[in-house]
Length: 150
Image: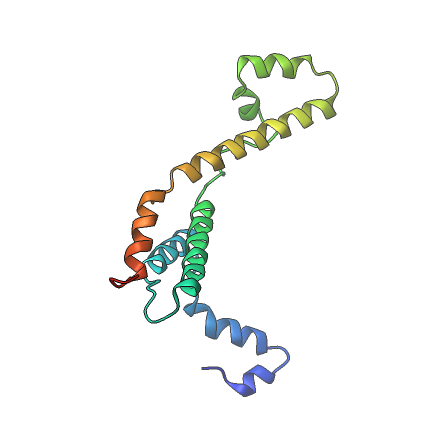
């Protein structure tokens, strides 16, 4: 697929590699999650050793969870210092914010609140993962393809 003459060209070599290989890569967080999700169901043990297959299965599971985390959209959180961000404060937070006198303290407080909101949303998103631990265990048993002795 790659042309050696174009690869050697100093001004066009890298662009040729990108143009040639880019259509074969999975792009976008939605597509990556779907691809990882389908890969989870393609991790059959086959003839491989059980212990080595467990490692492959766990890696596929971790990659699936990481791709699920990438689906979290934080674009709707208002920027620090904006009126929308300050308007989202609770009464207790607003009272504490108004008691701060220095601009640096106010900025630090807003940063802390935003980081807490992001952490809370990430934890909530992780809990919404569609495959429970019980279902993952069942998938593991089915994919392991154990015989009667095992």
